[in-house]
Image (cartoon, rainbow, N blue to C red; front, side):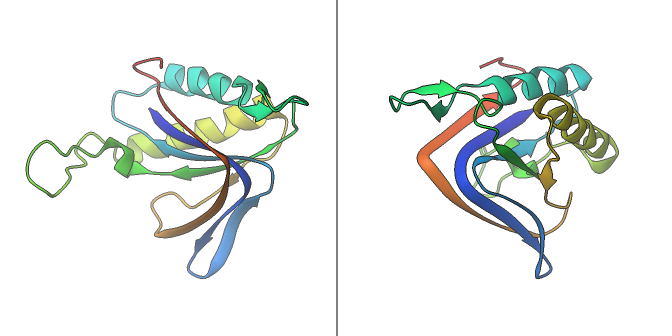
Length: 150
């Protein structure tokens, strides 16, 4: 499971002209799921996300977590995070999980993040053509791969 985590002052996602999710202070998370992912990946990654200290404290140092700042999360599925670009110029997405595997894990991530953060998670629509807008705060952008644990 891969996540691109962006600290935002605001973010939103629009599908077919309608806003499906938006947040103010918090995180925009682009989430990629592969066939090898399990509930353990969901649990590890969700814990890491809500506890990561990437928000500024009174001295401007990144010492506060999402929970500390009472921030919100916008979670967007992103199969292209598993693009393979070794051959040619056209990316392959063969490692990205198909919906029968990915959807239950995506839904489990939503539930896990809601449980850990104590807040409702805003989302896009799985598999839809989405227009994502954000104001990256910092900018702070961090990538995490649950298999590499880094």
